[in-house]
Image 1 (cartoon, one colour):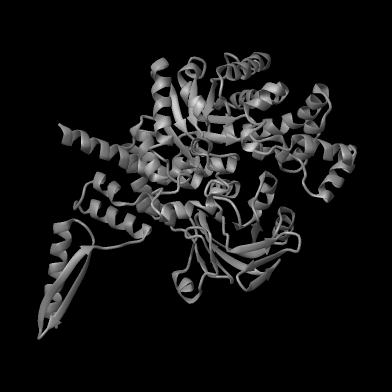
Image 2: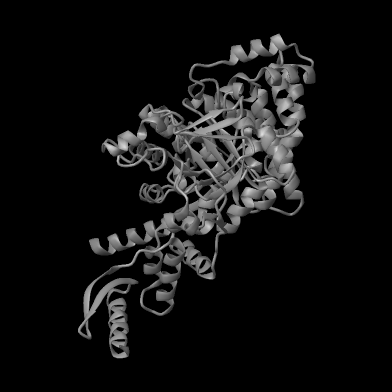
Length: 581
């Protein structure tokens, strides 16, 4: 029926041009007559969305601005990470489902600790790190793993945040699994898996498969780069990245990041001999002993910052001073305590006593952040010295380092002044004062800090919301434990979305607005950003644009998502302004 086929193609073209959008049409042919039943906007994958938008813009059917608005920013995840072959998914059923904490797909042999992950990887084996929950000391194992699976934790748990930063697939808070780290077994319903067994993770859906499924590599076609270029020109808010290594910084810069909004220095202390020196510092009896141990850490920190400054030449780099409680750096297992005792010649009992002394019922609200610098100023001084020494070294190479030193957990202006004074003193001692273009600022993580933002703004040169902790302290939810009940809150309509994934605009958002208003009443142009994981979530990015933040910062692989969301926010605003006229 060639005539009917020709008629069908003509109608299809007419519909596409009329709606200026790819159509999903339904038709039937009866007694050699064509009947059109319905038409609607066709569903599409992220890759197809970019292709369709760019083709239509290039053909003049839609404008560049419309092309930017046509692509769902969240769908870009599909372009940036590996994914499971759809055919393989159809043939296999998922055994369990947790939280889609970090997108992508991963296939590998199960390992239950960081040491085994490193051992397997050195043999060329691909591994999945399975833990009840991860901690900073698992960093090396996470780094060499294809993906991470945890039984506990939420979307902003340690495993989730670090995995997103590394671009690793992660399924967190999978309550359907039972992990026995000592016996090295994983039970999913009636199936038992041992170390070395192969599983597959889908970090985009949170699904866990009990076999090795085929995965497809990401495709970054030419249209994607052009769309990103259009989006960069349309957006008004800056987009930075959260990066702790030169490698992550380079990935983010290649994706279009305009600086670093957060470098977490605590992740730098767990590699090789660094953790030993860190533990020596914590176990020291006096300031002299702590300084001796910190002197061992200084060159490592200089090396870390030098690498990052080189990659981010000419762009701002926010470096957060040591943030977590000290107990996180000490060993937990008997064997580790014994090994540390032998290594640094400190009695086991003394180590156990110190671990007991540092134990806190609620460490996230305890002895951490700027409180460490107030009690042990030598820690903040060492980090400041490393930052300035690295900046001076990179400047000698003809590059332009722009360090911005961030003081975390501030809730009182006097805390900020004290640490700022230490940093300024070190700047003079190192010769950085007048030579290096640097700033000192603070993180707004607690409601009290937001309420005194005007007072802090008199001293601070920049501010940045740490929305993970701000959400915890405003709502009274633990980000690691909320996964146990947050699904019920959403299903019952108490919350529309998980507040650890999307900014709670009615609560946390109001506190953010208040802080911005107060700070800018003192310093009109103060640089005010966001570095929590919300910085890469589209609706949160749009909210940050709306309240007038200077920039958002997110994991390297979420930078394109933030750029597109920022562009869409700017275009939506311009349309509203025109409409209001």
